[in-house]
Length: 313
Image (cartoon, rainbow, N blue to C red; front, side):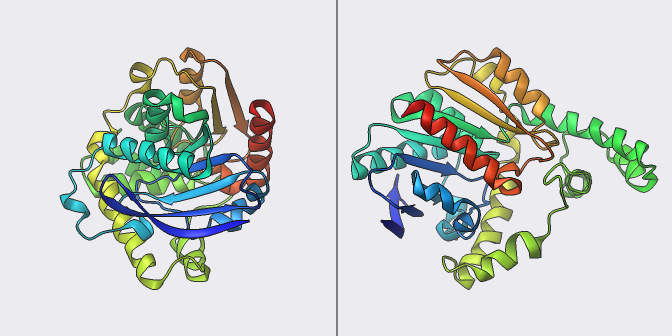
């Protein structure tokens, strides 16, 4: 049995991981959280505890995120490439520690950016790659989300939101104000979580306060890290275009898409899936779910992971 919340040193940076499993004989599964900055050590056992019966589950508060937040983060010359190198360093450490040949790699949203690139650049470390709410092209995805919102607000006769959307125009947005209007509208119409709108209290603070893994300072740092990193990576994320950057992979790929996801629209993920060349690929839709599909439907997510496990073990 493994239940270890600990510090690791990745590329000269002190970061935190949470490792859990019923058996050291289980295969390794490394989870890359979204955001950037939306670390999830505080809530992972609530949603994914059953995975510990089948995997050595590793949740990682990435550089500058959650428990790994450092007030000096602004001086770290951050880049997407730096986080990919952190994934590589952590994968190497885990493989050596648990004497495993390869790792199951799971990336959600922002984590799907660094996850897909890590799988492309360092395939020798990974059994397969599972992308949840896969980023493909941020700008094109936001444009499709904007079109979706115009359709929905017209259909619902939501004149107030419709007029706001027309006023700010289509993405990209250079101001926080326009971005906030766009994201709030997406949230209201199910782009994040299909069943309800997200809430700072219900979806973040309440779970953090109940967590045994997060202290009060960790909670404060979670918000500091998210606020800083989302703004910091905004421009670089708009340069991501996996249609051109990742045309093939040397590892099996599974894309998990929420049918109502308009943060990373499933239609765009499906286009990448159709074009990508890899040893094995599968596109799996979660009905009545959106961008946070694994939180909305943890049982279905578990079943998918077990299917993947059965196929590759």
